[in-house]
Length: 248
Image (tube, helix red, strand yellow):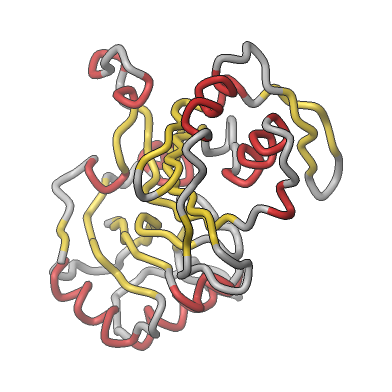
């Protein structure tokens, strides 16, 4: 039996890296007495996997963790037990049973992610923001009208020039910030800071001098072909909406 947990990450916990988040949830599962299953062998470990790692410094309202259970548990009860042992900055907001097959795992099906980018008054605080210049709305449209947006993408092992334009599904300015809808997952993965770096270079502003805060709104899987609509954003569905998700 498998289950998907949806959680938020905010406040000071945004500075905790992915490996530490994994260790944190291992301890939380024990303290909350969730009947999670373990692998066999000489060194058993909890069977869990995260849909999409979150970068350090990024907050989120839509993170997903898949676990395997050794016995059934009421979803509402699981949410309550987990939140009783959560620290400030981590909150479980959903718990849902999912199919047992590997094709349904969050790590496998992630295809996109949505973000909200805010402009900060100072890099010292992610809470104090300022309005974007009015001219940025038209500049974003010009930026997206480019046929190609080639950037230098660096990894731990290499660096290469990549055209990121096909991976930007949406980018627009609203009152609460710049909203991005980007490719994510194992096949294609575009981080919001890379998009904003390319944009600030396009409008001839130094990205290091423009402090942004990145907030992940949700993570998405691709809909079956027969369920897709014509618009890019209608080709995807939130991992939390794929089943009858139990929310608090």
